[in-house]
Length: 283
View 1 (cartoon, rainbow, N blue to C red):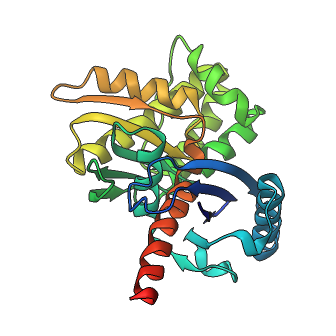
View 2 (view 1 turned 30 degrees about the vertical axis):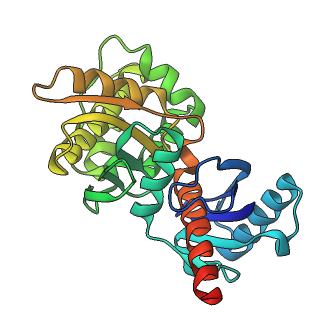
């Protein structure tokens, strides 16, 4: 068996996944299984220290020593991982991880702390095209976190509250500053929290659906990954809006481990590269 680690270093969190896969699995890695996963929020701490903490916790969970790991693959800001063996681009890592979690996936919407991106892929996780949100953060996890803090609700409450909305309030979908001003005005007008959150989710969902169209994704399974993959309010909005759009036949899904898609994909690619390197040395 080959044991590999994937370390996804993001802006707000570090995610680590350990994957065990049989020898000779090629890039598909049949029989691969997750043996450990760990998330550590950065919270203004030194990123290198947070990486060590997250990796150490995952090692302990997997009950293995550092020397037992055949390949440490990074993605995101991987240059901060001093003990890495190799690095993989975020899009290829997320595409591979998404396909591992749901083999029917043909596109990914990765929603991170600062950006969102749509990735089109084939049945082997080859990236066929992609589009990203602009530099404005109104379609990002950090923006939603800031709004939640202002409204006095926890991150876990955002999705369930949004789903109870009966009269969504429209907000600016372009600029985070304008959107935050919109929210402040809504609170002063007495708009219900759930209607504000649903309005934000609809704005974000619209942006992501436009990204998918721009990446030429019009049908098939779309998996939401990244930090907002567990936001049931965002998922519901994307499903509702996509159903009302003509010539758009996508099936939007998520997965309990979708937040680890980048780390899982890096670990799976790491296993493939480890085998290739070993073959070259033996030749």
